Image 1 (cartoon, rainbow, N blue to C red):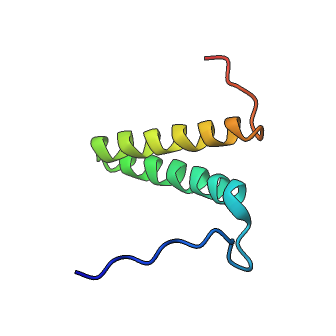
Image 2 (cartoon, helix red, strand yellow; image 1 turned 180 degrees about the vertical axis):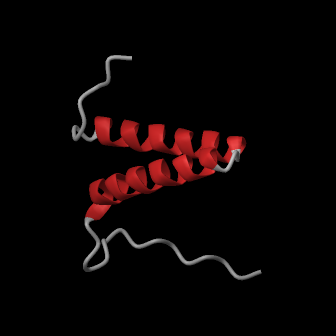
Image 3 (tube, rainbow, N blue to C red; image 1 turned 60 degrees about the horizontal axis):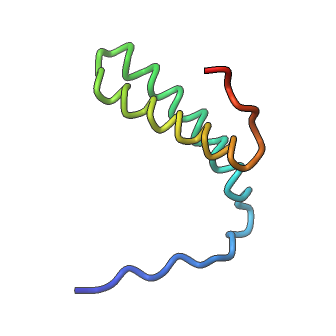
Amino acid sequence: MPMTPPIPDVQAQGDGGPEEAALYIKSAVRDLSRMARRHRHDMLAYLLDMAHLETEEILRLRGLRKPSGR
């Protein structure tokens, strides 16, 4: 069975890096969650909300977002 090649440590040219990726993913999953909820795909909306929370945590740990008051 072929093995997946390792992911290189260097970032691709034009890639904004992990912080920019997290910001983009945060925005995308928020929009997708709203769409899923609008069409009553409740479990999908829930999972997308969890992904949104995870991106917030990534950004918080990197010092890019202040902790929420929750």
